[in-house]
Amino acid sequence: MEIRNLEYFLEVVRTKSFTKAAQNLFITQPTISRMIKNLEDELEVVLFERLGKGVELTDAGRTILYQAENIVSSVHSLSDELADVMQLKKGQLKIGLPPMIGANFFPQVIGQFNKAYPNIKVQLWESGAKRAEDNVANGNLEIGVTLLPVQEDVFEWFSFVKDKLSVVVHPSHRLAGKVSVSLVELASEEFILFNEDFLLHERIINECVSVGFRPQVVYESSQWDFISEMVAADLGVALLPGTICNQLDKQRLCILPLVQPEIPWHLAVIWRKNRYLSFAAREWLQFTRKRLQANN
Image (tube, rainbow, N blue to C red; front, side, top):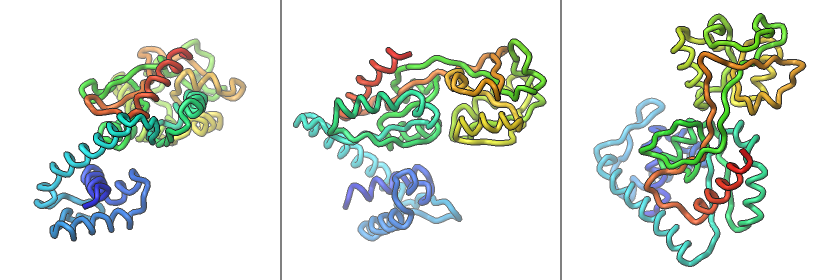
């Protein structure tokens, strides 16, 4: 029995989908289907019941699940600990990094880390903060970057940016001449938001609901520069972090402080609590904490 087959099995269990599991593991769907079939043939049981586009564990699958989790966890810990004992000081590190955050805070740090640790391969897994959290929590990634607050019973973390959201409108917008804008003043506006993979999506909607309205979302994107261009085309309003707003063209966009309430944008590097961290992960945390906090 190969450990890799058990890893694939656990990812299908977590996502309840062969397609999603394959995407998260950076392999094709036929590959993961074949690996699961090999595992089923070896154990002489059916592990999943196919239900439309999703899957559910069979009784046999549920029986195997607990042992598979323990086996995979033990093998990963053994490999990491042996590498540390032998002082190989090499390895591979997967980091969940939202595109907006990565582009603005990490290129220089990653370059410095690569020079200091040329034998550690850093693989960036780009996604919204919500998916980064999920993948750190379930063990697919050792480290991620997300928005605070986080679940303190699940994650360890350190903060490196404290910012807040601003309102971005077209220069001809009715609010463009104001000193500041309260959230309720946007109740009748059409919003351009980050998509649902981003924690800001849910956070902005929840804040709007808390002041008495549900925002009318007309466009969604994973790219802040595309969102700003949509606002510049007068297709709606956006709420973006001050760090991003500093990079926008003030001739084509009007940026206003958001008040009543302010919406914080506090960034943190996270890792799973009570989990063994590899040499690569420990060095990355120490290295980036020092540099990110010094720069902010």
